[in-house]
Image (cartoon, rainbow, N blue to C red; front, side, top):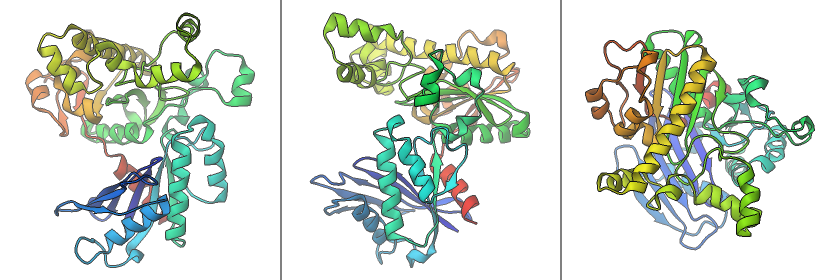
Length: 398
């Protein structure tokens, strides 16, 4: 069985073709600048050089057609016919309260995804466009929606409810939803394998740390709390996002600086986080280099990020009533040993001890970086959201 995984953005489309027999990637690529001048396809077949095809792509349907043509091309294709594609798995950012698991897409599912557009106005419309484009190009192939929010639908009301007038929840569904669910679910299952225990018996805190970051408490394979909220702005400090702040700052900025809501939204989402504190970059590699050169605000940004992340770990350790394993994943989590060490500072009293040499050696690879006498395991586990989407798609499309 071969599964095509699609992640459609507003002007881009990422894809992977995965052979489920081996779970190996047969080809992957990116359509850029869809509907914009200069559109192109970067297509990388397994164990071959990347091919760049520059061709107008007015719509996502045109992009999908280019991807499928590349898959069967005589020179850089990886399958003989489109009939070899058994199903298509779509990453969908927001499923609201409609979905607590992945589903086969039909008209009712599409209506529900559309109903969630106010909750994800940038992502959900693009996800729908990708779904419609694939349905047009492959009308008889099952399409599956895998939701970023679905894994967190197991959170109890005490964790997801905001202390606002209850009619706002009933009318507008304002509550914590959480994101990065596919990643948290994947690495939690991997951690259970590394522990040698059934996932149902494990208490795990997962750190998905990148330009966007979130922390999740996983109890018996279920999310019981997570740091992102109604939107991906909430939670820990991030690359350009503020994370959780005092909500009264919004009115203060409007009154004191004369900013309107759009300007404040841009400030909090695109100009804040470690970029805002440092004035240097949202890239943690740049911050690390600047801090090493004595840049005080770069060091402060790193310290604030580590502290804000550590605070959530403390909360979730209590919510879980103990921790069997801590998992670091995503760009920063997988590749930044000093940040992993900084986040777990002052946790020795909880039985957490890191092997500093193992930590330094672990970059972008699966590794156990715990000290021999650590009561809590510390793992680095590269995330693989595309494989998780493919697995869930294959399960539903059997």
